[in-house]
Amino acid sequence: MAESTMFYNDGNGAAEHDESRHFIRRLAERLVATGKLQQSGLDRALRVAGETGEHLAGILNKLGLVSESDLAAAYAQELDLKLAGPKDFPGEPLFEDRLSHRFLQQARVVPVAEGPEGVVLAMADPLDRYAIDAVRMATGAPVEVRVATPTDIEAALNLLYSTDAEGAAGTVAGEP
Image 1 (cartoon, helix red, strand yellow):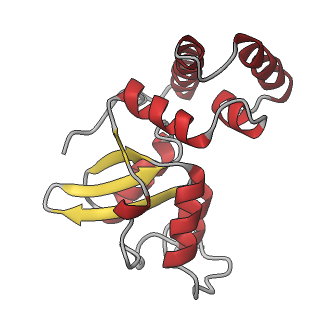
Image 2: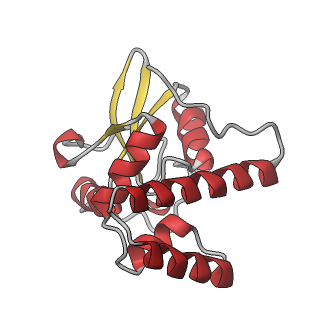
């Protein structure tokens, strides 16, 4: 499985953050160029991001300037990743003994397949290196990233863990 290493970090978190921020800016500019976002909307979102420190991609969606599906498609195109939709999600939780429901919700990720080459992980934010690394460490397998909308991730987690009463479980199953 091919894995993007675009945002791997050599220990300098600030450099990774800057690279991610510049990528999101380019992504937003692509959305403007393709007519999915108006320039005035981007300018507004950039002001909000500057004032709040929030992630630009999240602001674009929160303000209703870009749909989740357009944002997911732009991520997939820019990062050369595949999209994951409802039909791609598993019927039962994968790695339930190693990845807590709480972690999956907070990271907005769902493991959708496992095989000899590794784990296929649907993510709302494919730039989230922490989530990718946590899944890799917990499963002991390489991770192939797919892009999904936050709504699809949430719906899948609700279906997969509808009877889960995990409570205050940690990031990885079994952690405090």
